[in-house]
Length: 255
Image 1 (tube, rainbow, N blue to C red):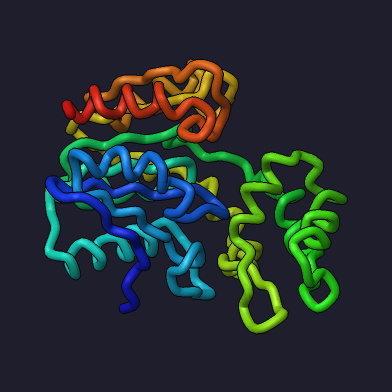
Image 2 (image 1 turned 60 degrees about the vertical axis):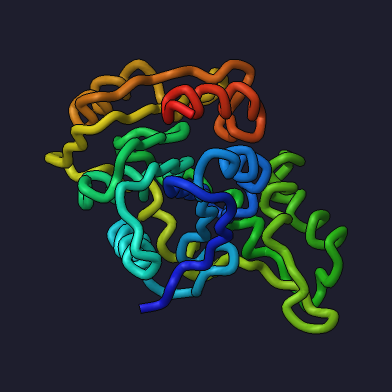
């Protein structure tokens, strides 16, 4: 079984951070370095993302086993676990599958419910890039802008571009697998899944991923949960209001 790529910084109790769809551990470098003053921070790339291995298979069950294998490899247990969006779904399923390995859980702007696939424009834009023609960052951005008008979203996606070979750009994520398995990303937590330890849900004030309706679903799965709204932030609340995000998580983890 292949090992997930990660960047490990700091010393102390292990704190795992799981990025969202199309992201990587690098997205969390700034906050990771802040947390590393108190914890041994693991900025993890999930399968088919960042510098981790590519596989044609992609599901939350597999990503949970990837994480379990990673913990066994480094002989870790009783970790704090933070997951954003897709990473939050992985973190929730990991916590209910291996509750003895998790101390506190932080879920960032996602709930246990099913979400309809809604990344069609992004996937269409990414799949429209032909690196034999679009052989510079400017040309890739120009092509993406035809289907992805939001500059911030394009900036986020462009962080995945690198020089694959001399003069040849490529995406770090495994676009074919992510396109094929896109419906997997919105899958709900299994109906009987329960986690009895402390869990913090952080939602963006301007995001609709967690609404009042989801609070009931969260209660059903996470018996000791707290839901906190991060002001002046949308779905990428850790990037949009990092100061309040850091404060809320630090208070919860009792730094």
